[in-house]
Image (tube, rainbow, N blue to C red; front, side):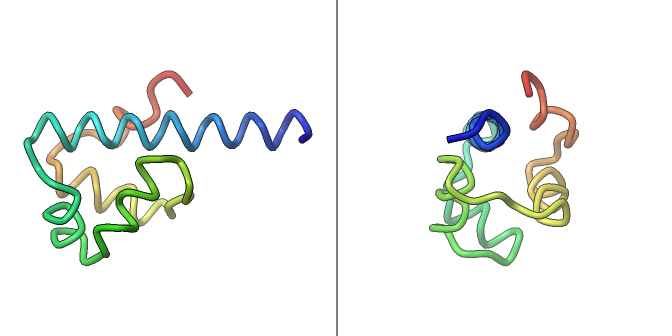
Length: 77
């Protein structure tokens, strides 16, 4: 695997972990967050595990649903 692909995969994992931490801090389930952004629970799980790369629209929807600054999701990237 080339260096750029590895870096992107790590970024997806960090982004997903940051979203999970924000969701858990608000005591929301993946199902509730999915409902709030009109998306499936399993898609939220895939994002949190770094398996899917969400669009900027979805990232902003998640931040709005969690009432947090979108910048929190990108810390340590």
